[in-house]
Length: 237
Ligand SMILES: C[S@@+](CC[C@H](N)C(=O)[O-])C[C@H]1O[C@@H](n2cnc3c(N)ncnc32)[C@H](O)[C@@H]1O
Image 1 (cartoon, rainbow, N blue to C red):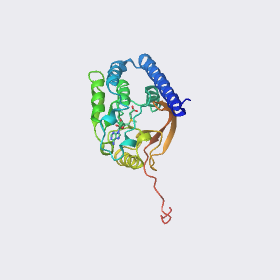
Image 2 (tube, rainbow, N blue to C red):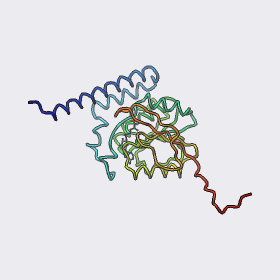
Image 3 (tube, protein in one colour):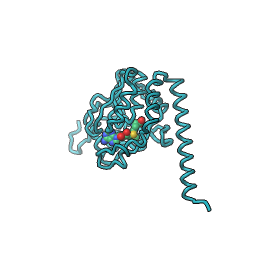
Image 4 (cartoon, rainbow, N blue to C red):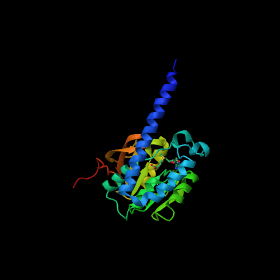
């Protein structure tokens, strides 16, 4: 008699493999057709992934975060989705993108290939090294820093990309507070799966895009001034 647990695992494995193959093909066509500047860095990432996968890296290099099983979940936004959002926000060379939890740095790479200065902040030194090596000599507008996103300097950012999916409530609250205290009014924030909860960061649009874990909402938020409460005792003119 067949083992139902085995069949379920097999079905999941087939679905995951099929999804990964479709994602890889979609991105391959996108890069060739629409962004050939990315061919050398993407080739380097692919070559490296044959030796070590970003999806299992953290099992080999356990970080010292309080909840690594949640905060070190790996996933990537597919490049055509990132590109659509860059176009939607009409970004230009005066913008600066910061990807908080940059992984292998693909969002930063695409930004740099489109002429947008970008910085990736990532906790794992191995991922920072992979991203730095992949862009070296090809994408001068891309830079990567090893560090904790909760300590990152956000003051230069005009767009912050945040993987809302895999960060704890406390981390999301810290990032929201830092965006509000450090960034200029009008700064955009894109958070995957969950928006950042702050009254000065209203969601202005929800875009459904493709990610390595399926179709997911991406929340576009924009930093506003605090609303001024009119005190009931204020004199009226
Ligand atoms: C979901 S991945 C995002 C990858 C990338 N943004 C993309 O879409 O291609 C989240 C990344 O955040 C990193 N990370 C987790 N906690 C962090 C922290 N406290 N500071 C900096 N990076 C962190 C993980 O190592 C992982 O690479």
